[in-house]
Image 1 (tube, rainbow, N blue to C red):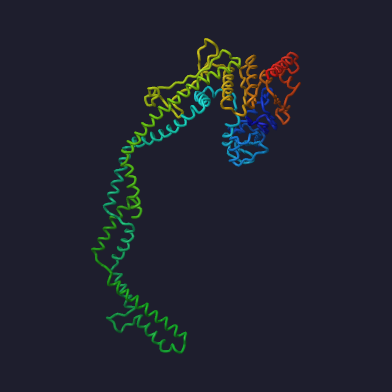
Image 2: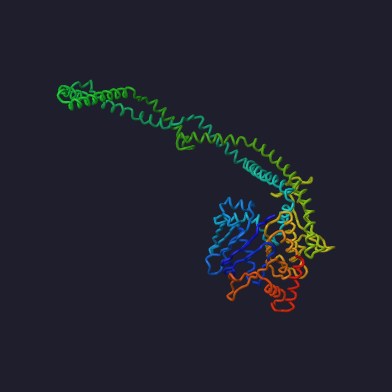
Length: 580
């Protein structure tokens, strides 16, 4: 099967590295160099490419930013390629170009295939491309949650399928329980709210306001309150337009307009323009007559009844009492009433809702108990196989008598779900506490690896776990930083041999200080500083032949030209070639 390969990384202004290129290849690559030379920056750089946290302290003093660029050959159709293309990335001759820039101020930018992308996307791709392991990962393996995750990953669909169902039911139970708690704990508040809403709705219903009624009544009250003045004004205007019967000698507008119209009508045949004016004056006479008639009707229809005015004011007072409490005008009062009626229905239905939610909660708890039991069964079965596989790997890592096992347990909790006939505590991943145990030699009790494993043993346990994963859930590239910490002698040789075996099915990059490990590498890279304390472009080089022997000699004895160290280095290389 064609696998992805990390081909090259270029690192600029990161830590002690000024500008360097790390050329990688398929198989096993060992990265070596003196302490403080910058080997760990290789791991840091890859972490940045894979969406790791950007620390501005990594930027070289005096530089504006640090830049890491990587080139990964990814086979067509791989999930990483599909995801990258969805983000708009383009491949460069079958390779995926990734870059990450970290500024001294802390800002971070990511590019994928020439396209700017969120840093989180790089982290998504990392799961399919590279597994990075270092000292922090070893410490992570001490956490029970990480041990459970490792077991679940090994179990595959046997755990993943019921776990997905469990997670969905768990989320629904949380939502139902939250809503149920809210309703029950706030029952008194909700009852008070319902009483207030009911009082307000009854008060509005008693008045029976009509939309726009307040505006209509305001206009009517204004008219009734000034009825006498309105009638007098209408009469005066009517007299001015149509005359006053009590004053036959008075001059009114209608009489004057009529006289003007007759004067022009007498001569309109002599001039068309004057005839037009005569017509317009006639129209004015008609309009004056219409207005005078309406004024007469207005005066006749004007209601000056004080009883009606009192009734209007009383009605307005009732509406004002509502608007003071429930809205600016009658329209907003009616809107409040509509919304409050809906809310009251909701509050009045709490008893029914509590019953429904309680029934659903109990059903979900029962369902979770069954799913939690299924998870326990699947994990127990997988744990036996996983422990046996890791134990077999440890035999290949100079721990022939070590035994690995898992303890899967639950904690009783009266408020928990029922698993195995008893109530137990539960969480988003089930009811199981999973703990990895190690018995390093016959007769030794199996103890949690946090207590029963030395640094070197923990490194080998982690490597054994990853090798087991490689057979069931392979990752294209593995990068180990100080996986050989606390290891020496024969154990170091066995680690080198096992890494070489892993490299037959995946790309393996190891940052190491042990010559026994480096000797088994297909390619060895040396990271070295210049006189000014930086790693430059020429500071990361491939070692071959005599140069590799000299570096292994330095790693063995601290002396590149020691004949004894050279002989030992050549012996290590010969052993590695024989194993290959």
